[in-house]
Structure formats: structure tokens, C-alpha cells
Image (cartoon, rainbow, N blue to C red):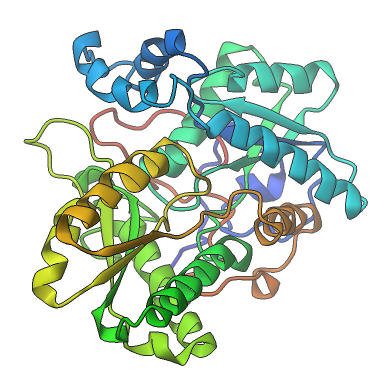
Length: 397
């Protein structure tokens, strides 16, 4: 693999000369004066559900009747997605950890798809004189929807608010293999295997399913830097596979019985027309096949997710759990990082990397793929259906 640091045209909205000049890692201190917590957003009542889903699918022309097919997931929980409450808790936890370390930076929270919107957060920061922002997006991996789309939204917000000449937004690196992020998955797998074996299950009859949000196959193929040969699933699949393999190796060190436990990466929550290929296999399809493989128990590990939002509560705690019951399998779903101490401390570590300009060789990561780049590479994570749009925190296009 190679990641070129050759000179390329700078991108607009980069906040530091070092972040605009081409190198993948910013190894010079940057005087950020605010943190932007960038979330997906979610409805907070029944009347919000369809307007929220219209925001999520804007530009795709999906009628409300089809949106109602997804709306029932939210309506099952009173029309309230847990994601906003989770981000409020994360914001509070980050503020506490920053203060504990003596880092005097305010945290502004804004969402892509529901209030408070990113434009609200960026405007509030500007009004308070905070114009050099470092964004933490609540998505760990490289793909259009989990990285570039946030960067495009940052650029769009700067344009729409007229703040592009005064406010700049950089983005914390993809953090899929930072030890603060993966700690929850190690603990969860270890505890699941220990519980199953304590109940009499043989290690070889336990299945670990690492799951993440499916994405269109074309988007996956184009995820990550263009000058790396990632394979058919692009950086998105490669990053998940690498983290899952590391988690299993670490669990085996802590719990030798786990060394014989089989594992697999699966996908969930796909949407879009059936004619469009998405990453597979689907988690519920795989669960249905497990009895024929001699499995008696399944632990589902939400490797692609930061918190217990709707894709976890519905797609895993409801649909996947039901699929396991139908297959006659014991079922466990392991925790997401949420606001665990390890994760919160890890996010602040990532913030400090950029404040200090920490050399890449000193940055924490657990796989051979890391540490990921600070400045997204040219053509990274293209959405071929929409083409390249202006994007902050990376090199054009």
C-alpha cells in the first residue's frame, strides 16, 4: 500500500497551511478554538419522523409512502431516535474530559439531518468568535456516507451561512482502529464468549458476527484513498475486517477459549432499490444459516457504530434477535462505545493529536492500516451518483 504526499491543489476551507498543502498527516500544531461534534441527527417525536426522513433522503425523490416503510422503526419507539440524547451525553462527557485535561475548548454540536443543524452550530461558534474548528464526526470508517458526506456538509454550511471566508473546519482522522474506539468491542466479545461457555457451549459452536451498515457496492469500492489497492469492498470493508481480526486476536489473548471461536463480518440496514448492489452478506440471512454450520449461539458485535441508535435498537435488538430466536440460537448483542470512559478519552486523544501536531509515528492505532490520514486524499470516497462536490478537510476533488 502507498499513500502519496505529493503536492496537489489545496482544498477550500482548510484551517491550517499544513492541512491544505498535501501531506496526509498534519504534524504541526494548530490553534483550534472550538470543537464541532457532527452527528447524523434523529427525530424526537412522531411529528418529526417523516420530515426527518425527507432530510435524510433529500434529492432522491422518494415519496412519503415509501418513507413510511422505514418510519415504523421510529414509530415503534414513540417517534424518538435515541441518537440525539446520546450525542448530548457525548458532548457533556467530552466537555468534562477536556476540562479535566486543562484543554479550554468549547464543544458545539450540530447534525446533518435534524436540529440542532450543523449550520446552527457553526453560526453559534462564529458569533462567539470561534472560527478555527476541529470536527469530530460520529462515524469511524472511510466511505461516502461515513466521511465525505460530512465533509461536503461542512463545505455546504460554510457556503450557505456566508462564513466561508472567516470560519474553517478540519476533521479528526477516521478513528476505526484507535484503542479508545475498539475497547468496547474487545470487552463485549470477551464477555459474550465467557457467558456462552459458562452456559456449556463449546467454543466452536459459538459464532461472532461483526456487523456494520451496508453501503452501495460502488461507494464501497471507491472508499478511501485512490492510490491504495483495498479490494472489492474498498477501504470501508478492509478497515472493518482489520479491526474485527484485531479484536478477535486480542480477546484470544485475554480469554484462550475464544481462540477457536469463528467470526465473520456481515452487513445490515441496507436501503435503496433491489437492483442496486450493496455490501453483503446480510446479518439476518447469515443468522438463519448458522444452525446448519453447527452453531448454537451467536454474539452480534456492532463494530460499525458509535452508539445504540436506531440501526442498533431495531435492526439488531429487534430483527437480528428475532432471527436468532427463529433459528433456535442463544443470542447476545455486545455494547457500542457510547460514552464509555475509554471512548471519551480516545476522542480527546484524537483532539490533542491535532492541537499538538503529533507525529504520525506516535499516534495510537491497533491495526497495520493506521493511523489514518488527517487530510482526506484527492478523490477519496466518491459518490458516483452525485459526483464530486466541494468538501472541507481534504484535498480536491
